[in-house]
Length: 317
Ligand SMILES: [Mg+2]
Image 1 (cartoon, rainbow, N blue to C red):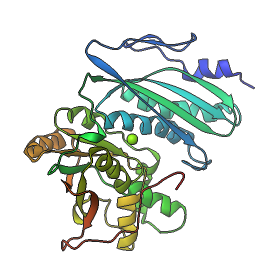
Image 2 (cartoon, helix red, strand yellow; image 1 turned 90 degrees about the vertical axis):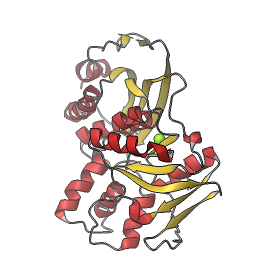
Image 3 (tube, rainbow, N blue to C red; image 1 turned 30 degrees about the vertical axis):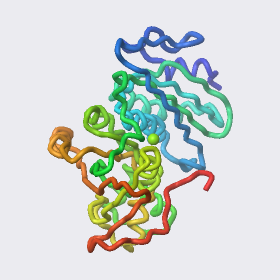
């Protein structure tokens, strides 16, 4: 059986990029943060059975474990540069590890992120990535900056990943076309790094939608000490599938794993945000408004208040 060191050498050691002084191979890595920049760090863990099915494709898992971390970097407006990876594997299955590394590095190379260290151990399948990046000092997008009367925006579409999960669990039946569309959302989400970078000096607050819109927007409201009104009809979802609308709303509002960005910005930024949408070819939708009164009110197409007995995902809830 292949040794730990050989596994790392063969599949996880790559030439370091220009922002890394010393990558994998010593006791620590050495990185250089540019003048005038702050280091942004975040860690996200994916555990078999909790975050993914144990039979998920190794290459997709390699993508996702990095994508969810890049998404947090995107939410801060950070430029991702480096990451570490700690992995527990039940066995040293080389074919599996090779496929995982292929998915991981395809994304890492696309975003020019260096893997600069990590750890491997035998144990129940579990991956932990730490992402590190740079953001201009004092310019990071925070959760606490939302202002009364700010527009609330969201990128892409919401609910696709949750719809796919319900399909896999046999709770709903999606058409072939929707399976294609939603499977991508669940298994290989696209981190909105370019959007986060462009929102610096434009957005007042930002978060990535990982636990569901209601829960994640809720974090912005709490940190900013404001409330909000959301318009159900304005929230973008995948092609309206042939399912109960309550089920769809549940997925759009409370489904996790979308990894879109939800941000707030002053009204006079609308034209700039529309320009960003065109330049990135990414749908950006205005879905509500920040209010002085605390709490979150959701209104339907007729402007009636909708009572929602739903919440986002809470691991210990
Ligand atoms: Mg986040």
